[in-house]
Every structure is written in structure tokens, then in C-alpha cells.
Length: 377
Ligand SMILES: Cc1ncc(COP(=O)(O)O)c(C=O)c1O
Image: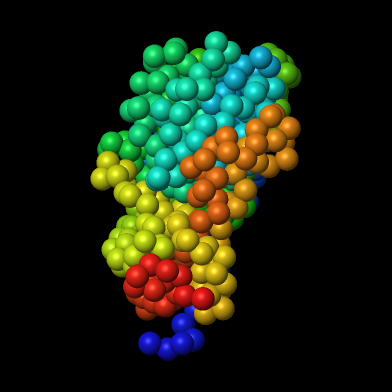
């Protein structure tokens, strides 16, 4: 194999190499002038609801707004505590803070998912909701999450931003709790060429409220029922979403193939490289393919020097970020997530990788890890 095979992390230039169908959709939109809400957006909302298997959904500006809108619809605000894992993207906790509630962090398990037992230990009489995350496109066991919620009468909002197309016990992430929020940011499985988000719920009353709140609280052109905001998904992007949805399952199938190959081959490299366990009830979206490595920084340097664009998601858990420490958290509070943060490596694992590129990435990890498990110096 050539030493010059590069393994890019960024797949965006490949994703829209052929955008002719999107352009045809845009042409129809432009001719209709249906630039806010309207038929193109409603069409995608219907397609998304059918794909996810939820009776109701609505499109938002982005995944962060989807979380904020859902929290507001659940009535969560000042004085409420919301338990959430400490290893997500900033937006999960940012949304809790944005509605005036207090985030309470919990630790994670060896699959990088919410540790439900640890979450249970953090329930207080101020806890109103659980906000589990389908982190990296894998999922916590939502049955356990729901058991915990039921035991304490808690609301559940699922951050399924990375999990469009995943499955948990046969159904979509986001469908277990009271609400589910999704992102269509370019680095998510359904990329809308910019920002976009979705909220799902089975609750008709909450959905009616969200539809109004997303659009200034309007009931018609001249009247509002309450003060709202503008959190609307753009029709231009709904057209991209409709198009991308048609290829999603096929693209995810290739990602899962790459994941299987990585798992099988990297899993034999010895104790210095740890592949997380997979759950057979959870076909993942492989949004982030992460392993742990004893010498993480050494491995990343080796990979990058050899054209394999490895990354870290993320080196500092949320509770150790400045605003997390301001809440009173410190080192040692989340031992599992903190140990992982020092060891995580994300490998390119998208659907556009060739077998040769996957082999190259595996070879470069193997090249660094000695058969006995010690990292090569
Ligand atoms: C787990 C998670 N939650 C929330 C978000 C926020 O989504 P967005 O970037 O669309 O606002 C993201 C992605 O960025 C995410 O990965």
C-alpha cells in the first residue's frame, strides 16, 4: 500500500459533489417564494416524522434551539435541576442554562454513554428532568433511563443530535422520552449545508405550543397568543434535508461497515488500545468513531504525521470547563469521563472512506501500538 494514502476526517466536499437534485428543489422553491415555513418545510417535517417513527415533529434553526425549545415546552426553568452527562458537546448543558435551569452532571460508562446508576445517585428533590445524550451516535440504554425517570417522576428530553438514523431496541433515538432533539449541522448524519434542528414529541399540546413559540407566538398575521421567538428551520435547508434523507440508511450502512472493520482489527492490538464495547440493541450512527489509547497524544501525532486525520472529542469534560467549575465541580468528580478525556482518539470513519483508507488508518494505529501493548516511543 502506498505511503501516500491520506485518510481525511472532513467528508463535506464529497457529500455534495453532485447537488443537481438539490438545485432542482431550490429552483422550485425560488419560483414559489415560499421562503419562510411553507410547503417545502412542512413536506420535510412529514418525511422526518415518518423516518423517525414519531407522530409529530417540527424544524428549528439548529440542534441547540431544538433543545432549548423542547426544555421550554416541558416547562423547565429556574429552580429546576436537570441531570445530564458531563461528556457531551457544550450545547446540551448550554440549553439547560439558557432556560434558567441548573445542570447537574453525571458520569459516563465504558461506551461513553450516560451512567444511569450514577445519574440515579444525583437525583434530588429539585430534579425535574433527565437529559441523556446519544453521544457519538451511540446510545445509552434508554429503557434504564426511562425506568429511572419513572421511579422519580422525572421528565426526559433526549439529546439525539448525533443520532439521526440510529436505533435503540429497534426504535429511533429520541422516541423514548417526552421529547427528542436532533441536529442537522454539517457534522451530523443529515447535513443541511448549514444549521438545522428538529424536535419530536407525541404530546399534541406541547407540539402546538412549540409551533407557535417557534414563530413569535403568532396565531395569525395580526395576533400573537404569547411572546415567542424565531427558531424556524429554513426551507432552503429543508430541501437539502429531504434530499439527504433518501440516502441516509445507505450511508449509515457504510459507516457501520467501517466501524465493524475498525472494531475487529483495532480490538486485537493489545491493552494500550481500547475499543469500546458495542451493544447489539444499538446500531450506531458512527458520528464519532472513538477509541482509547494509553499514549493518546503520541498516537495522534503519529497518525496526523502519517496522513490520518485523528481528533479528540473532547479533551476537557463539561464539568471541568470554566462554567462547570463555577458550578462547584472539580477534578475527581467524574472519574470515568475524566480518565477517558485523557485517552480518547477519534478516527475518520465516514461513508466516503475507501477500504484502502480504512486499512491505512488501521495500519497506522497498529504501527504505533506494540503487540505487547506498550506504546512505541
Ligand atoms: C450532542 C450534541 N448536542 C447538541 C448539539 C448542538 O447542535 P447544533 O450544532 O445544531 O446547534 C450538537 C452538535 O453540534 C451535539 O453534538
